[in-house]
Length: 212
Length: 212
DNA sequence: AGCTCAATACCCAATAATGGGTATAGAACA
DNA sequence: TGTTCTATACCCATTATTGGGTATTGAGCT
Image (cartoon, each protein chain N blue to C red):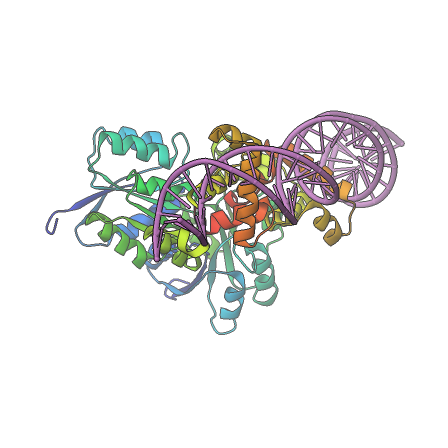
């Protein structure tokens, strides 16, 4: 990797942002921006003729969003590294990171030096997750597992928190998990007690804060 | 203007985007980026010690948004040119352009050359308005993040969404806003209908997704 | 002057969530 | 073996939310 040029494609529907990325990446030694595209479909098309080492892309793009595009790319060209750069922190990102469909997630609040370091880390095979700094601690904990220590939540409880976060009602959860509604209600009560919170809204905020 | 250095301040809470802008602007001959700030308050503070010729700023910033900041700046330092660079096209922008509170509005979908031309035009005293084409707008409606256009929520509705997101119950919100519980219930119903969602969980996810 | 729309308020019925209990089977562990 | 903990399940009562209506007021636009 040392003397080889790293070829990059940038995919972002905000052209000005893409231009900015190009400036930052293009100034790195041995980096070359092959192309910029503004939607997912175009990105896939370009991959039929261009073979980049790295793709920087936005999560929200027209025609084919970042995650869908990433999934397709990793399936057909697993060697290409993918870095998602997004406005906001989506809860599902961590799961997707773990499934190795993308190599890095970087929030747009990050700085150029952080992006540069992340690119270098990814090219070395590392996974990188850059979130808003205030939540960094909690996320690091997630990476090294686990919540059970801190919040003393059981696996089932965490599972149920996720389902509630996704908008399911107690009844739906009971049906999904093939359990009694009473059981889910008990779990909810225990979760609220353990976390010292009250109500669905606070629970969802907890889940988002800790990236469940 | 020909041999004088144009001093610029960049205000955007997305540091990576601000870095990109700095690269683009910094490469123009006789341009100097004095400072980058990530919120409106900080921008105003900086203006007590720095005297830029031009400010590039985001519409949506914490603490003091772009329009409020622009209004204050034009009132106290009318000589400073202000260019707003925003994610989406707000309908009120045109009115504000007409009131001469800002000198240019540029959508983030624009390209670096367009930005450069806009900056030069503004420095010559022109007003510039770069919006997405009407077709593009339709596409944005289908795919991405402009809830103003797409969902047509009123100010009161947005206020109530925030309170729900913060964990308040209908009763608490009614008490806080000194309104009837019935009114809050009506607002909730209207919000659900407009957003095509159902239940507190989905509402909070919407709020988080759109950074309310 | 008439129209539209946001914001307000109310009524009613059905469903969901919350909070107080109790209880039991099985796993983990000292 | 006895204890502790998780996950399971149930009962009851109260409060909250949801979804179906209708209606009025005031601001702003034509």
